[in-house]
Length: 368
Image (cartoon, rainbow, N blue to C red; front, top):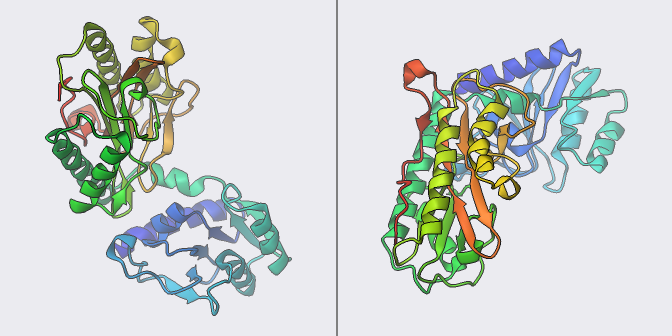
């Protein structure tokens, strides 16, 4: 695996050098982990002129799910734990005779940016921009394997919950139980705050669980994800509680299901981001739900739960093979509830079977 991380750093170095910059400082934790195999608390990665360093405020954590730094990287541990690794790394870069340093301006605070300029006043600071994020978009098979295992864990946790008694329990209680089950099945933890929404809350994107209790006849929408070796996946499903669904629930569910299927079927190498969004969105739009639609239909996943690409109406760019994305259309009707269906898939060419579905819990409208 050392070779993989070395290759990633080499690709970034090529980008930095092509931009006329001598060294680069990576501070965003997910980007540090992508390039160094681990991102201890407060650590930064310096791609220097003479050598690459992982600069830490303290010794790396030994917990397995935190990852271990690439053995080909030299660790530089600051003498005091309250030091700023980014500022220290800038000083090291200056000591390596670098005349310029690319930094992640979108991640640094103004105060840290000033401190870096102050400790190394002769360094010309340039913006690294989203160079590392762009490298992260296409995943290798090891990364996809981690996502696949995370998806299996999330499917297990959700499947077990569906076999339990739900009526009378609160959204908050069910969310906590799901997160416990994720860890029980081997996840590092939840990929994001688990959302459980019932009744009038159902179908609301990003709903935070409340003390509302599950009642018969409710829509129940659940969105959860597992983190496995740092990689995060996502699944969302909607069910009906305790009785046969009403006609309006069946109609709304079938509509969202059709939109989600259209989005999934649009996933292919070379497909424009906006076209995938349009495929799902127009199904709901044509049924009169334009005002109830979310701002995007899906997004990339990986070391963070919300990565590029964004599948949205104004998104620019085209999909590549081996890009994992969510497809998650939904409709929420104020006062009544709604439906969300969310899968994590990997873009694959038609010759390889088309998009690979990682989250396999049934999308049938079950009455629980």
